[in-house]
Length: 128
Image (cartoon, rainbow, N blue to C red; front, side, top):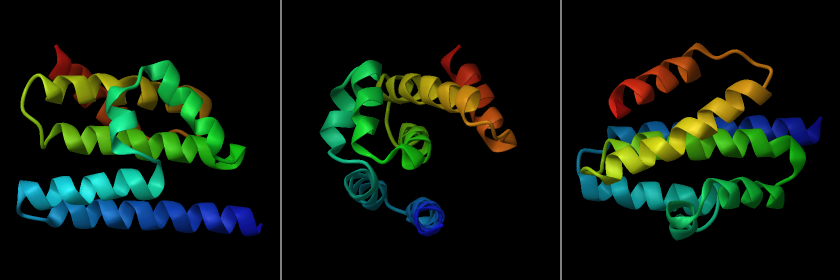
């Protein structure tokens, strides 16, 4: 029960921080906050930008099993949000990183999410 409370608090905290990031006006402020969120919730920003999908998926083994899916979703959200801050071709690269994560989560979570499905559809349209 304590572990589940921790996970729920972590998720609420993450999405509140993401909302604050989106409310910032300056791209530079958003970028700084985004880097801080990678560090706080996942690990090194550079790792998640330069690693293969397989390496990224392996990195989640450092988290307790009950947190892994939630951490994956945090990363997919960060990639998705960051794509709006970057010019091409970086925008597409981030979307190409987010989509397989969202798809993996969608297949394995057991929880249907309209928001996740909407984002997956949006990414597919943007990558065409």
